[in-house]
Amino acid sequence: MSRPPVRNFVGGEFVAHDGETIEDVCPLDGSVLTTVPLSTADDVAAAVSAAADAFPDWSSRTLKERAQVAYRYRELLTAHADELAELVHLDHGKTVAEARAEVVRAIEVTEFACSLPQLAAGEVLEVSRGVECRVDRVPLGVVASVVPFNFPMMVPHWTIPIAITLGNTFVFKPSEQVPLTATRTAELLTEAGLPAGVFNAVHGGRPVVESLCDHPDVQAVTFVGSTAVAKSVYQRATGNLKRALALGGAKNHLVVLPDAVPRTTAENVVASMAGCAGQRCMAAATMLAVAGSEPVLDLVCEAARRLVPGENLGPVVSAEAKQRIEDFVTEAEQDGAKVLVDGRNTVVPGREGGFYVGPTVLDEVRPDSRIATEEVFGPVLAVIRTADVAEAVAVENASPYGNAAAVFTRDGRLARQVAEQASAGMIGVNVGVPVPLEPFGFGGWNESKFGVGDITGKSSVEFWTRSRKTTTRWH
Ligand code: NAD
Image 1 (cartoon, protein in one colour):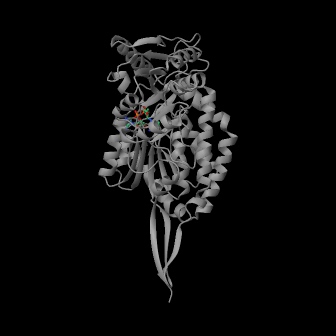
Image 2 (cartoon, helix red, strand yellow):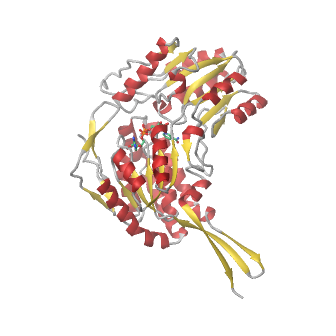
Image 3 (cartoon, helix red, strand yellow):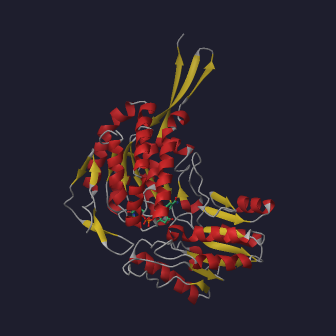
Protein backbone atom coordinates (compact mmCIF):
# COMPACT_ATOMS: atom_id res chain seq x y z
CA MET A 1 0.00 0.00 0.00
CA SER A 2 1.67 3.21 -1.14
CA ARG A 3 -0.51 5.82 0.58
CA PRO A 4 -2.10 6.57 3.97
CA PRO A 5 -5.73 5.48 4.40
CA VAL A 6 -8.31 7.84 2.89
CA ARG A 7 -10.34 9.70 5.52
CA ASN A 8 -13.59 11.57 5.60
CA PHE A 9 -13.35 15.37 5.88
CA VAL A 10 -15.85 16.78 8.37
CA GLY A 11 -16.00 20.24 9.93
CA GLY A 12 -12.55 21.16 8.62
CA GLU A 13 -10.79 18.02 9.93
CA PHE A 14 -9.84 14.64 8.49
CA VAL A 15 -11.44 12.07 10.77
CA ALA A 16 -10.12 8.60 11.57
CA HIS A 17 -12.39 5.75 10.46
CA ASP A 18 -12.55 2.56 12.49
CA GLY A 19 -15.30 0.85 10.47
CA GLU A 20 -15.29 -1.15 7.25
CA THR A 21 -13.01 -0.19 4.37
CA ILE A 22 -12.35 -1.30 0.79
CA GLU A 23 -9.18 -1.24 -1.25
CA ASP A 24 -8.47 1.47 -3.80
CA VAL A 25 -6.76 -0.33 -6.69
CA CYS A 26 -4.54 1.32 -9.32
CA PRO A 27 -5.82 0.30 -12.79
CA LEU A 28 -2.36 0.85 -14.32
CA ASP A 29 -0.89 -2.24 -12.66
CA GLY A 30 -3.47 -3.67 -10.25
CA SER A 31 -1.54 -2.59 -7.13
CA VAL A 32 -3.38 -1.49 -3.98
CA LEU A 33 -2.99 2.26 -3.44
CA THR A 34 -4.82 2.67 -0.14
CA THR A 35 -8.06 1.91 1.70
CA VAL A 36 -11.34 3.84 1.49
CA PRO A 37 -13.86 4.13 4.34
CA LEU A 38 -17.27 2.56 3.79
CA SER A 39 -19.06 5.23 5.76
CA THR A 40 -22.41 4.86 7.49
CA ALA A 41 -25.53 6.93 8.11
CA ASP A 42 -23.86 8.22 11.31
CA ASP A 43 -20.89 9.52 9.32
CA VAL A 44 -23.30 11.27 6.94
CA ALA A 45 -25.18 12.76 9.90
CA ALA A 46 -21.90 14.16 11.32
CA ALA A 47 -21.01 15.78 7.99
CA VAL A 48 -24.51 17.23 7.50
CA SER A 49 -24.42 18.61 11.03
CA ALA A 50 -21.02 20.29 10.39
CA ALA A 51 -22.37 21.74 7.14
CA ALA A 52 -25.54 22.97 8.87
CA ASP A 53 -23.43 24.67 11.59
CA ALA A 54 -21.32 26.42 8.94
CA PHE A 55 -24.29 27.65 6.89
CA PRO A 56 -25.40 30.77 8.85
CA ASP A 57 -21.97 32.43 8.69
CA TRP A 58 -21.09 31.35 5.14
CA SER A 59 -24.46 32.31 3.65
CA SER A 60 -24.41 35.70 5.38
CA ARG A 61 -21.23 36.72 3.55
CA THR A 62 -21.67 38.62 0.32
CA LEU A 63 -21.42 36.82 -2.98
CA LYS A 64 -18.40 38.93 -3.87
CA GLU A 65 -16.67 37.88 -0.64
CA ARG A 66 -17.41 34.19 -1.29
CA ALA A 67 -16.14 34.56 -4.86
CA GLN A 68 -12.77 35.66 -3.44
CA VAL A 69 -12.34 32.13 -2.06
CA ALA A 70 -13.13 30.76 -5.53
CA TYR A 71 -10.43 33.05 -7.00
CA ARG A 72 -7.82 31.83 -4.53
CA TYR A 73 -8.91 28.22 -5.07
CA ARG A 74 -8.59 28.68 -8.84
CA GLU A 75 -5.00 29.86 -8.33
CA LEU A 76 -4.23 26.85 -6.14
CA LEU A 77 -5.73 24.42 -8.68
CA THR A 78 -3.52 26.00 -11.33
CA ALA A 79 -0.42 25.86 -9.14
CA HIS A 80 -1.09 22.19 -8.29
CA ALA A 81 -2.37 21.12 -11.73
CA ASP A 82 0.48 18.67 -12.40
CA GLU A 83 0.19 17.06 -8.98
CA LEU A 84 -3.61 16.72 -9.33
CA ALA A 85 -3.24 15.26 -12.83
CA GLU A 86 -0.75 12.72 -11.49
CA LEU A 87 -3.26 11.66 -8.79
CA VAL A 88 -5.99 11.26 -11.42
CA HIS A 89 -3.62 9.21 -13.60
CA LEU A 90 -2.72 6.92 -10.72
CA ASP A 91 -6.21 6.45 -9.31
CA HIS A 92 -8.24 6.34 -12.53
CA GLY A 93 -5.63 5.14 -15.04
CA LYS A 94 -6.26 7.69 -17.80
CA THR A 95 -3.13 9.05 -19.48
CA VAL A 96 -1.34 12.00 -17.90
CA ALA A 97 -2.39 14.19 -20.87
CA GLU A 98 -6.06 13.23 -20.38
CA ALA A 99 -5.75 13.82 -16.65
CA ARG A 100 -4.27 17.29 -17.27
CA ALA A 101 -7.14 18.10 -19.61
CA GLU A 102 -9.69 17.27 -16.92
CA VAL A 103 -7.88 19.41 -14.34
CA VAL A 104 -8.13 22.27 -16.85
CA ARG A 105 -11.90 21.66 -17.09
CA ALA A 106 -12.14 21.77 -13.28
CA ILE A 107 -10.31 25.12 -13.36
CA GLU A 108 -12.67 26.44 -16.06
CA VAL A 109 -15.76 25.67 -13.97
CA THR A 110 -14.07 27.32 -10.99
CA GLU A 111 -13.54 30.41 -13.18
CA PHE A 112 -17.27 30.34 -13.93
CA ALA A 113 -17.85 30.34 -10.15
CA CYS A 114 -15.55 33.39 -9.85
CA SER A 115 -17.88 35.18 -12.31
CA LEU A 116 -21.05 34.50 -10.31
CA PRO A 117 -21.28 38.05 -8.90
CA GLN A 118 -21.84 39.14 -12.50
CA LEU A 119 -24.36 36.38 -13.29
CA ALA A 120 -26.36 36.15 -10.07
CA ALA A 121 -26.68 39.87 -9.35
CA GLY A 122 -30.47 39.76 -8.89
CA GLU A 123 -33.05 42.04 -10.47
CA VAL A 124 -34.94 45.15 -9.49
CA LEU A 125 -37.79 47.07 -11.16
CA GLU A 126 -40.14 49.87 -10.16
CA VAL A 127 -43.34 47.96 -10.95
CA SER A 128 -45.67 50.91 -10.27
CA ARG A 129 -44.87 54.45 -9.14
CA GLY A 130 -43.01 54.21 -5.80
CA VAL A 131 -43.31 50.42 -5.62
CA GLU A 132 -40.24 48.36 -6.26
CA CYS A 133 -39.92 44.59 -6.79
CA ARG A 134 -36.56 43.03 -6.18
CA VAL A 135 -35.46 39.44 -6.76
CA ASP A 136 -32.45 37.99 -4.94
CA ARG A 137 -30.89 34.54 -5.36
CA VAL A 138 -30.64 32.95 -1.90
CA PRO A 139 -28.69 29.75 -1.10
CA LEU A 140 -30.61 26.60 -0.18
CA GLY A 141 -28.63 25.38 2.88
CA VAL A 142 -26.83 22.03 3.09
CA VAL A 143 -26.53 20.39 -0.33
CA ALA A 144 -24.98 17.13 -1.52
CA SER A 145 -23.21 15.92 -4.63
CA VAL A 146 -22.59 12.29 -5.63
CA VAL A 147 -20.14 11.59 -8.44
CA PRO A 148 -18.93 8.69 -10.66
CA PHE A 149 -15.42 7.29 -11.11
CA ASN A 150 -14.69 8.48 -14.62
CA PHE A 151 -13.68 12.11 -13.99
CA PRO A 152 -12.26 12.38 -10.45
CA MET A 153 -11.53 16.12 -10.86
CA MET A 154 -13.88 17.47 -13.53
CA VAL A 155 -17.25 16.07 -12.45
CA PRO A 156 -16.89 17.06 -8.76
CA HIS A 157 -16.03 20.58 -9.95
CA TRP A 158 -19.27 20.79 -11.93
CA THR A 159 -20.88 21.33 -8.53
CA ILE A 160 -18.39 22.16 -5.74
CA PRO A 161 -17.26 25.70 -6.72
CA ILE A 162 -20.67 26.82 -8.00
CA ALA A 163 -22.80 25.55 -5.11
CA ILE A 164 -20.35 26.83 -2.49
CA THR A 165 -19.82 30.26 -4.05
CA LEU A 166 -23.60 30.69 -4.19
CA GLY A 167 -23.61 30.34 -0.37
CA ASN A 168 -24.52 26.70 0.23
CA THR A 169 -22.59 24.33 2.48
CA PHE A 170 -21.64 21.05 0.94
CA VAL A 171 -21.39 17.29 1.52
CA PHE A 172 -19.45 15.55 -1.22
CA LYS A 173 -19.65 11.79 -1.92
CA PRO A 174 -16.67 10.84 -4.10
CA SER A 175 -16.55 7.60 -6.08
CA GLU A 176 -15.09 4.84 -3.91
CA GLN A 177 -13.09 3.75 -6.97
CA VAL A 178 -11.15 7.05 -7.22
CA PRO A 179 -11.02 8.65 -3.76
CA LEU A 180 -7.59 10.34 -3.87
CA THR A 181 -8.39 13.76 -5.36
CA ALA A 182 -11.15 14.41 -2.79
CA THR A 183 -8.47 14.74 -0.10
CA ARG A 184 -6.48 17.31 -2.09
CA THR A 185 -9.70 19.17 -2.95
CA ALA A 186 -10.47 19.52 0.78
CA GLU A 187 -6.91 20.66 1.55
CA LEU A 188 -6.79 23.22 -1.27
CA LEU A 189 -10.23 24.64 -0.44
CA THR A 190 -9.06 25.09 3.15
CA GLU A 191 -5.85 26.75 1.97
CA ALA A 192 -7.99 29.07 -0.19
CA GLY A 193 -9.68 30.30 2.99
CA LEU A 194 -12.92 28.29 2.97
CA PRO A 195 -14.23 28.18 6.57
CA ALA A 196 -14.46 24.82 8.36
CA GLY A 197 -17.67 22.91 7.67
CA VAL A 198 -18.51 24.56 4.34
CA PHE A 199 -17.04 21.61 2.42
CA ASN A 200 -17.23 18.07 3.77
CA ALA A 201 -16.46 14.75 2.10
CA VAL A 202 -17.91 11.36 3.09
CA HIS A 203 -16.50 8.30 1.34
CA GLY A 204 -18.32 5.05 0.68
CA GLY A 205 -21.01 3.54 -1.48
CA ARG A 206 -24.77 3.10 -1.63
CA PRO A 207 -25.54 3.57 2.12
CA VAL A 208 -23.87 7.02 2.06
CA VAL A 209 -25.89 8.06 -1.00
CA GLU A 210 -29.16 6.79 0.46
CA SER A 211 -28.49 8.56 3.77
CA LEU A 212 -27.88 11.82 1.92
CA CYS A 213 -31.17 11.39 0.03
CA ASP A 214 -32.99 10.67 3.29
CA HIS A 215 -31.43 13.23 5.64
CA PRO A 216 -34.00 15.92 6.49
CA ASP A 217 -31.36 18.68 6.59
CA VAL A 218 -30.09 18.07 3.06
CA GLN A 219 -31.93 20.46 0.75
CA ALA A 220 -30.69 19.36 -2.67
CA VAL A 221 -28.88 16.40 -4.21
CA THR A 222 -27.04 16.18 -7.50
CA PHE A 223 -25.95 12.84 -8.89
CA VAL A 224 -23.79 11.85 -11.86
CA GLY A 225 -23.39 8.17 -12.72
CA SER A 226 -25.18 5.28 -14.42
CA THR A 227 -28.83 5.56 -15.46
CA ALA A 228 -30.16 2.86 -13.11
CA VAL A 229 -28.66 4.60 -10.07
CA ALA A 230 -29.52 8.09 -11.38
CA LYS A 231 -33.17 7.05 -11.53
CA SER A 232 -33.24 5.62 -8.03
CA VAL A 233 -31.36 8.59 -6.52
CA TYR A 234 -33.69 11.04 -8.29
CA GLN A 235 -36.76 9.15 -7.08
CA ARG A 236 -35.47 8.84 -3.53
CA ALA A 237 -34.38 12.47 -3.19
CA THR A 238 -37.53 13.93 -4.77
CA GLY A 239 -39.63 11.39 -2.82
CA ASN A 240 -38.19 13.09 0.27
CA LEU A 241 -39.22 16.45 -1.27
CA LYS A 242 -35.66 17.53 -2.07
CA ARG A 243 -34.51 19.34 -5.14
CA ALA A 244 -32.63 16.86 -7.36
CA LEU A 245 -30.75 16.64 -10.61
CA ALA A 246 -29.43 13.24 -11.68
CA LEU A 247 -27.30 12.72 -14.77
CA GLY A 248 -27.21 9.17 -16.07
CA GLY A 249 -25.44 7.00 -18.61
CA ALA A 250 -25.21 7.38 -22.35
CA LYS A 251 -25.04 5.70 -25.74
CA ASN A 252 -23.84 8.34 -28.18
CA HIS A 253 -24.22 8.04 -31.96
CA LEU A 254 -22.00 9.60 -34.61
CA VAL A 255 -23.63 9.87 -38.03
CA VAL A 256 -20.96 9.73 -40.76
CA LEU A 257 -22.10 10.89 -44.22
CA PRO A 258 -20.29 10.00 -47.46
CA ASP A 259 -19.13 13.60 -47.98
CA ALA A 260 -17.42 13.84 -44.53
CA VAL A 261 -13.74 14.91 -44.68
CA PRO A 262 -12.28 11.39 -44.37
CA ARG A 263 -9.13 11.75 -42.29
CA THR A 264 -10.28 14.36 -39.77
CA THR A 265 -13.59 12.53 -39.36
CA ALA A 266 -11.81 9.23 -38.67
CA GLU A 267 -9.47 10.88 -36.16
CA ASN A 268 -12.42 12.54 -34.41
CA VAL A 269 -14.37 9.28 -34.26
CA VAL A 270 -11.43 7.37 -32.77
CA ALA A 271 -10.57 10.17 -30.30
CA SER A 272 -14.19 10.13 -29.17
CA MET A 273 -14.52 6.35 -28.81
CA ALA A 274 -11.12 5.69 -27.21
CA GLY A 275 -10.34 8.88 -25.23
CA CYS A 276 -10.15 8.05 -21.50
CA ALA A 277 -10.40 4.40 -22.66
CA GLY A 278 -13.98 5.01 -23.74
CA GLN A 279 -15.02 5.77 -20.16
CA ARG A 280 -16.73 9.07 -20.94
CA CYS A 281 -20.43 9.77 -20.97
CA MET A 282 -19.68 11.73 -24.17
CA ALA A 283 -17.81 8.87 -25.88
CA ALA A 284 -18.85 7.83 -29.37
CA ALA A 285 -20.08 4.30 -28.84
CA THR A 286 -21.86 3.84 -32.15
CA MET A 287 -20.93 5.01 -35.64
CA LEU A 288 -23.85 5.18 -38.02
CA ALA A 289 -22.09 4.73 -41.35
CA VAL A 290 -24.35 6.04 -44.10
CA ALA A 291 -23.88 4.17 -47.44
CA GLY A 292 -20.87 5.58 -49.28
CA SER A 293 -18.85 6.40 -46.14
CA GLU A 294 -16.75 3.18 -46.33
CA PRO A 295 -13.45 5.06 -46.92
CA VAL A 296 -13.91 6.73 -43.54
CA LEU A 297 -14.35 3.36 -41.87
CA ASP A 298 -11.03 2.14 -43.29
CA LEU A 299 -9.33 5.22 -41.82
CA VAL A 300 -11.11 4.69 -38.48
CA CYS A 301 -9.54 1.21 -38.27
CA GLU A 302 -6.15 2.65 -39.22
CA ALA A 303 -6.38 5.36 -36.52
CA ALA A 304 -7.58 2.82 -33.93
CA ARG A 305 -4.61 0.53 -34.68
CA ARG A 306 -2.23 3.43 -34.03
CA LEU A 307 -3.34 3.58 -30.37
CA VAL A 308 -0.89 1.85 -28.05
CA PRO A 309 -2.28 0.59 -24.73
CA GLY A 310 -0.05 1.75 -21.89
CA GLU A 311 1.19 4.72 -23.98
CA ASN A 312 -1.64 6.77 -25.46
CA LEU A 313 -4.50 4.53 -24.27
CA GLY A 314 -5.00 3.99 -20.55
CA PRO A 315 -6.57 0.96 -18.82
CA VAL A 316 -10.22 0.66 -17.83
CA VAL A 317 -11.06 1.17 -14.18
CA SER A 318 -11.16 -2.39 -12.84
CA ALA A 319 -10.70 -6.08 -13.62
CA GLU A 320 -14.52 -6.44 -13.61
CA ALA A 321 -14.90 -3.61 -16.14
CA LYS A 322 -12.30 -5.25 -18.44
CA GLN A 323 -14.14 -8.57 -18.27
CA ARG A 324 -17.55 -6.95 -18.88
CA ILE A 325 -16.28 -5.03 -21.92
CA GLU A 326 -14.61 -8.11 -23.43
CA ASP A 327 -17.80 -10.13 -22.87
CA PHE A 328 -19.76 -7.48 -24.79
CA VAL A 329 -17.38 -7.84 -27.75
CA THR A 330 -17.50 -11.65 -27.72
CA GLU A 331 -21.30 -11.63 -27.58
CA ALA A 332 -21.47 -9.16 -30.49
CA GLU A 333 -19.16 -11.37 -32.53
CA GLN A 334 -21.35 -14.40 -31.80
CA ASP A 335 -24.29 -12.24 -32.87
CA GLY A 336 -22.79 -11.73 -36.34
CA ALA A 337 -20.70 -8.55 -35.95
CA LYS A 338 -17.30 -8.48 -37.73
CA VAL A 339 -14.36 -7.67 -35.45
CA LEU A 340 -12.22 -5.31 -37.57
CA VAL A 341 -9.91 -4.29 -34.72
CA ASP A 342 -9.75 -6.57 -31.66
CA GLY A 343 -8.64 -5.20 -28.29
CA ARG A 344 -9.47 -8.26 -26.21
CA ASN A 345 -6.74 -9.99 -24.16
CA THR A 346 -4.48 -6.95 -24.23
CA VAL A 347 -1.46 -7.19 -21.93
CA VAL A 348 1.00 -4.32 -21.48
CA PRO A 349 4.53 -5.65 -20.89
CA GLY A 350 5.76 -4.69 -17.43
CA ARG A 351 2.17 -3.92 -16.35
CA GLU A 352 0.68 -7.39 -16.53
CA GLY A 353 -1.61 -6.62 -13.58
CA GLY A 354 -3.20 -3.60 -15.34
CA PHE A 355 -6.75 -3.61 -16.74
CA TYR A 356 -6.09 -2.81 -20.40
CA VAL A 357 -8.55 -3.23 -23.25
CA GLY A 358 -7.16 -2.38 -26.68
CA PRO A 359 -9.08 -0.29 -29.23
CA THR A 360 -11.87 -2.35 -30.75
CA VAL A 361 -13.93 -1.72 -33.90
CA LEU A 362 -16.93 -3.92 -34.75
CA ASP A 363 -18.64 -3.68 -38.13
CA GLU A 364 -22.08 -4.75 -39.30
CA VAL A 365 -23.52 -4.56 -35.81
CA ARG A 366 -27.27 -5.16 -35.61
CA PRO A 367 -29.10 -2.07 -34.31
CA ASP A 368 -31.11 -4.13 -31.82
CA SER A 369 -28.13 -6.10 -30.42
CA ARG A 370 -26.94 -5.58 -26.85
CA ILE A 371 -23.68 -3.89 -27.88
CA ALA A 372 -25.66 -1.39 -29.98
CA THR A 373 -28.16 -0.50 -27.29
CA GLU A 374 -26.40 -0.80 -23.89
CA GLU A 375 -23.59 1.34 -22.48
CA VAL A 376 -20.27 -0.52 -22.86
CA PHE A 377 -17.98 2.14 -21.31
CA GLY A 378 -14.78 0.92 -22.94
CA PRO A 379 -12.72 1.72 -26.09
CA VAL A 380 -15.16 -0.08 -28.36
CA LEU A 381 -16.86 1.31 -31.48
CA ALA A 382 -19.93 -0.47 -32.86
CA VAL A 383 -20.48 0.38 -36.53
CA ILE A 384 -24.03 0.13 -37.85
CA ARG A 385 -24.51 0.49 -41.61
CA THR A 386 -27.49 2.58 -42.73
CA ALA A 387 -28.89 3.24 -46.19
CA ASP A 388 -29.44 6.98 -45.66
CA VAL A 389 -29.65 9.80 -43.14
CA ALA A 390 -33.27 9.05 -42.25
CA GLU A 391 -32.37 5.49 -41.24
CA ALA A 392 -29.40 6.77 -39.20
CA VAL A 393 -31.62 9.24 -37.34
CA ALA A 394 -34.18 6.48 -36.70
CA VAL A 395 -31.48 4.31 -35.05
CA GLU A 396 -30.34 7.26 -32.91
CA ASN A 397 -33.91 8.09 -31.92
CA ALA A 398 -34.60 4.50 -30.84
CA SER A 399 -32.01 4.75 -28.04
CA PRO A 400 -33.49 5.43 -24.60
CA TYR A 401 -30.47 7.61 -23.79
CA GLY A 402 -29.92 11.15 -25.09
CA ASN A 403 -26.62 12.58 -23.92
CA ALA A 404 -24.81 13.42 -27.17
CA ALA A 405 -25.04 12.87 -30.94
CA ALA A 406 -22.80 14.07 -33.75
CA VAL A 407 -22.84 14.35 -37.50
CA PHE A 408 -19.86 14.48 -39.85
CA THR A 409 -20.54 16.08 -43.22
CA ARG A 410 -19.70 19.05 -45.45
CA ASP A 411 -23.39 19.59 -46.24
CA GLY A 412 -24.97 22.28 -44.04
CA ARG A 413 -28.53 21.18 -44.80
CA LEU A 414 -27.90 17.56 -43.76
CA ALA A 415 -25.94 18.66 -40.70
CA ARG A 416 -28.89 20.77 -39.62
CA GLN A 417 -31.33 17.92 -40.29
CA VAL A 418 -29.40 15.56 -37.98
CA ALA A 419 -28.84 18.27 -35.37
CA GLU A 420 -32.58 19.01 -35.27
CA GLN A 421 -33.83 15.42 -35.42
CA ALA A 422 -31.39 13.65 -33.08
CA SER A 423 -32.90 13.11 -29.63
CA ALA A 424 -29.92 14.27 -27.56
CA GLY A 425 -29.10 17.28 -25.43
CA MET A 426 -25.59 17.91 -26.80
CA ILE A 427 -25.00 17.88 -30.56
CA GLY A 428 -21.70 17.92 -32.45
CA VAL A 429 -21.34 19.05 -36.06
CA ASN A 430 -17.94 17.73 -37.17
CA VAL A 431 -17.10 17.52 -33.43
CA GLY A 432 -16.82 14.07 -31.86
CA VAL A 433 -17.04 15.10 -28.20
CA PRO A 434 -19.50 18.03 -28.18
CA VAL A 435 -19.03 19.19 -24.58
CA PRO A 436 -20.45 22.71 -24.21
CA LEU A 437 -17.92 24.93 -22.43
CA GLU A 438 -18.69 27.69 -19.92
CA PRO A 439 -20.89 29.67 -19.80
CA PHE A 440 -23.03 26.99 -21.47
CA GLY A 441 -24.51 24.17 -19.43
CA PHE A 442 -23.75 20.44 -19.55
CA GLY A 443 -26.70 18.06 -19.66
CA GLY A 444 -28.38 15.43 -21.81
CA TRP A 445 -31.97 14.39 -22.46
CA ASN A 446 -34.17 11.32 -21.97
CA GLU A 447 -32.63 8.60 -19.73
CA SER A 448 -29.34 10.53 -19.61
CA LYS A 449 -30.75 13.13 -17.22
CA PHE A 450 -33.53 13.33 -14.65
CA GLY A 451 -34.56 16.75 -13.42
CA VAL A 452 -34.82 20.24 -14.85
CA GLY A 453 -31.90 22.31 -16.14
CA ASP A 454 -28.23 21.56 -16.69
CA ILE A 455 -25.61 20.82 -14.04
CA THR A 456 -23.27 23.64 -15.09
CA GLY A 457 -23.76 27.01 -16.77
CA LYS A 458 -26.50 29.50 -16.05
CA SER A 459 -29.15 26.99 -15.01
CA SER A 460 -26.87 25.79 -12.19
CA VAL A 461 -27.51 29.16 -10.55
CA GLU A 462 -31.24 28.36 -10.53
CA PHE A 463 -30.59 24.89 -9.14
CA TRP A 464 -28.38 25.96 -6.21
CA THR A 465 -30.49 28.94 -5.13
CA ARG A 466 -34.09 29.96 -4.56
CA SER A 467 -35.44 33.38 -5.42
CA ARG A 468 -36.59 35.84 -2.79
CA LYS A 469 -39.06 38.38 -4.17
CA THR A 470 -39.28 41.58 -2.11
CA THR A 471 -41.88 44.26 -2.85
CA THR A 472 -41.18 47.66 -1.24
CA ARG A 473 -43.08 50.95 -0.95
CA TRP A 474 -41.58 53.86 0.97
CA HIS A 475 -44.35 56.41 0.66
P1 NAD B 1 -22.31 4.36 -10.78
O1 NAD B 1 -23.74 4.70 -11.07
O2 NAD B 1 -21.96 2.94 -10.54
O3 NAD B 1 -21.81 5.16 -9.47
C1 NAD B 1 -21.97 6.53 -9.34
C2 NAD B 1 -22.01 6.90 -7.87
O4 NAD B 1 -23.14 6.29 -7.25
C3 NAD B 1 -20.79 6.44 -7.08
O5 NAD B 1 -20.43 7.47 -6.19
C4 NAD B 1 -21.29 5.20 -6.35
O6 NAD B 1 -20.67 5.02 -5.10
C5 NAD B 1 -22.76 5.47 -6.16
N1 NAD B 1 -23.62 4.27 -6.24
C6 NAD B 1 -23.34 3.11 -6.91
N2 NAD B 1 -24.39 2.26 -6.80
C7 NAD B 1 -25.33 2.90 -6.06
C8 NAD B 1 -26.64 2.54 -5.62
N3 NAD B 1 -27.19 1.37 -5.92
N4 NAD B 1 -27.34 3.45 -4.90
C9 NAD B 1 -26.80 4.65 -4.60
N5 NAD B 1 -25.56 5.03 -4.98
C10 NAD B 1 -24.84 4.18 -5.71
O7 NAD B 1 -21.45 4.98 -11.97
P2 NAD B 1 -19.89 4.81 -12.24
O8 NAD B 1 -19.63 3.42 -12.73
O9 NAD B 1 -19.10 5.34 -11.10
O10 NAD B 1 -19.70 5.84 -13.45
C11 NAD B 1 -19.94 5.53 -14.80
C12 NAD B 1 -21.33 5.97 -15.22
O11 NAD B 1 -21.48 7.38 -15.03
C13 NAD B 1 -21.58 5.75 -16.71
O12 NAD B 1 -22.89 5.25 -16.85
C14 NAD B 1 -21.45 7.13 -17.31
O13 NAD B 1 -22.15 7.33 -18.53
C15 NAD B 1 -22.02 7.95 -16.22
N6 NAD B 1 -21.63 9.35 -16.33
C16 NAD B 1 -22.56 10.25 -16.77
C17 NAD B 1 -22.22 11.57 -16.93
C18 NAD B 1 -23.23 12.56 -17.43
O14 NAD B 1 -22.92 13.74 -17.45
N7 NAD B 1 -24.41 12.15 -17.85
C19 NAD B 1 -20.93 12.00 -16.64
C20 NAD B 1 -19.99 11.07 -16.17
C21 NAD B 1 -20.36 9.74 -16.02
